[in-house]
Image (cartoon, rainbow, N blue to C red; front, side):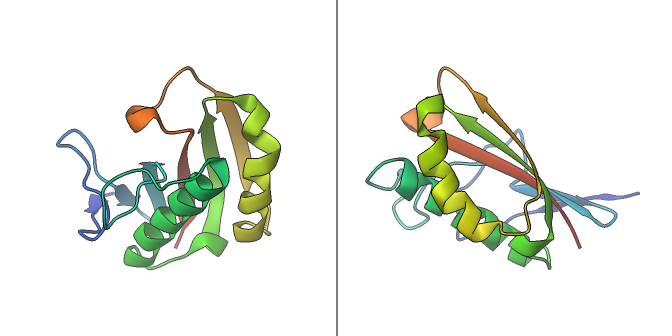
Length: 125
């Protein structure tokens, strides 16, 4: 199978070491997304609710470019810098993923730009 990179120019650019997403057969693997506003290239103001909303919006834009959407997400991985934010993050998450895909959430020490959350997904087309 051929690995096809997916890039959405309107979103914050990745560095040269990875693609925003790749397609392999009928699967889309989206790289970790922060709550970065595409217009400013900075983290959105606010806290975990706003960063979660923006990260999911960025993922949705990438999936749209790949020909699918959030409803086709099968697996979500979430990285939080503070596990006490989980219940608040889940408030936003549940709105966008009512189909309850498989999910892993882990606490980590630090994220780029001092973000509170990073999300990656695997979706089918």
